[in-house]
Length: 414
Image (tube, rainbow, N blue to C red; front, side, top):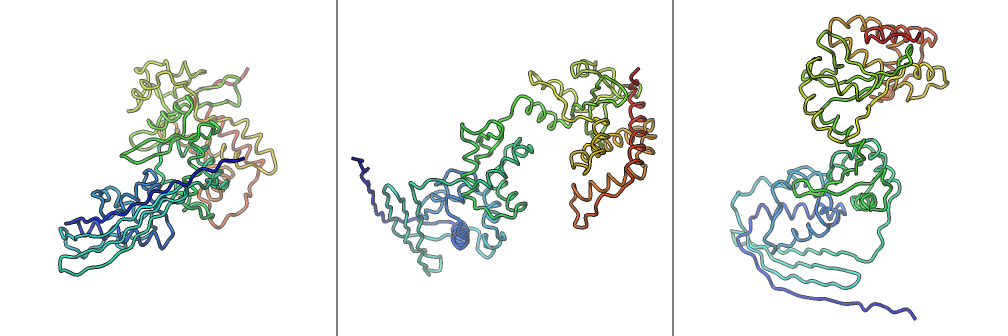
């Protein structure tokens, strides 16, 4: 025979009062509470979007509670309620005006429900009064159902590196609300994030909670390789791998964003691009032999035990093979554009390399570059299909590759 758990009930009633309460703080609370009720945003969801534990906002709503909404949270209330700041923060009240609050707090709790009911009267400085009734009810015992569509969206964001830096719940919620057609509730997001922070989650998508300025954050649990790539991102310095079309030996070089916000390849003092057939060889070069970027010393010193790895691979041979396929894949187009751009970076950084820019101007190359940015990067509404002379494109591309490899000093295969 199955035993049933007794329904333990707690019920209390308190007569409370609070004097000299800031009226502006109270009015902010009232307005925000009423907007959330109208939009069916629960107290738990507000707490979650504020980056707090479930009952945080319920405590703030207690009119007899000594705490109030901290100033740093006032800026995020309009975003939570999807409304303008003047709908929440009044501008017609005296800064130091106070009110008195008198009333009753009824509290009820059993195995299924937790209920706070506030019945109180506010007395203003002119002697007028106003009555309020606030009811905060939390259902317990129900199983949280994961929205699998939302979970997959979060996994995509994880795989794209969105969570490599800590993110607040509100930031995540606003991003998804802006970029995805489906309407998800804050509670659904909270449940989905809880799924990804569970220890049983696939490590590929696992998140961990942290705290930033007393607000809960969500961040991917990075592998050592991911930590190195994030280290590169922080310092705007990356290792690139190049697979020559006319040589059997791969080459590595350093690509960085300079203080003038232009992307450049690391060059030696005599103007040559610093190359090595291995990452170890690349990193062991003396600092005195090349033009040193501002962040290079910090980047090198903080690598520590992290495993250095290339962040991108340029392979002209694979690009040519990709253009032989029908249809041409988006990844092949992206690989071409990445190569086209790095050639441009080198051509723009020094007059000795300007000749590369002339080779980039070949008509078929620029057609493909324009198509990719218009259709796949900027996603303009008028998306024309890719139309170009493929044979001429391959000829122009091979000439560009040959000039680039010659500029790098890569010798042809014997």
